[in-house]
Image 1 (cartoon, rainbow, N blue to C red):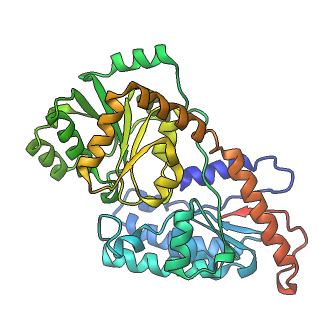
Image 2 (spheres, rainbow, N blue to C red):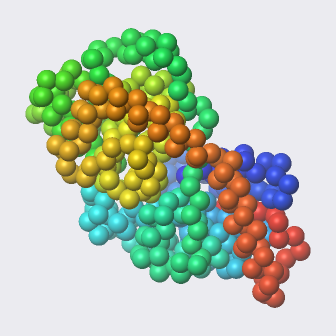
Image 3 (cartoon, one colour):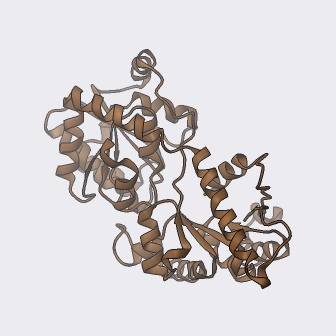
Length: 369
């Protein structure tokens, strides 16, 4: 969410029609080093932030994170835009995301996202999320737009020589490297990646799993030992974007078998780096990857392993996916995202000007929340 907000703010800097002013509420200095941190977080989210938004004066109000949709209760209905990245917790509550959310978290999320209906426009990262917003939150289709996210230009193919050097620089690297980028959340299907690794190694393929993000938890480590693949896993932890670019380039394939995604940055970043991708067939990933990757149901370990194996063993297929991935990733630019958001702001401003209670002097001005 922060990356999205930062990219919008950067993209609109110096824009001819939109001036963006960010509003943020920082943690209390006293709460950072005390047991009051969680309480302070709730106060910031549900008291201090709404009050700060209410005090700001702008022509268009943009809530950049659906988790803060409740801010719309204090903002002008006809001049508020909300970006909805996903409705993960609602899908999870329906048993469609590979986990069940905590009851309190789901209730709070359901309450907050109920305010999506108050916005003049809800903007989604994908058509899959748009469908969820209409079906699960009852927002009229005419007030829901789709604006895909972009991929940073630093994610790029580094060249054959660099790739060979990077592969040689990864310790304990087998003949093939399968990369998984994960926050460790249940919907990312980490156990599925371990099962795919086991299936590949049992079929005689010399492959290691390179993991970026949250390290394996205790249960996942136990599963890796039961599957006898613990020694074939390289846990890199959280890395810089620069290092992530190198790992994408060094990997032979990205494995991304999530049960649910609202968009899917890792497959897009991998394609921009010329790395073939194998993903689950969830709607948002299918939308982003298209025919530039291979897909299988997230729970079908054998199909996912077969897809990865086909990429590893067929140079022709790998080259075709690299070419298609690079071409597809080139369409997802932040310049495009910013341009389409400018059109959304303009449309909302025009509608507001036609409503006497919403008229403002300078409807071109935008304010991000």
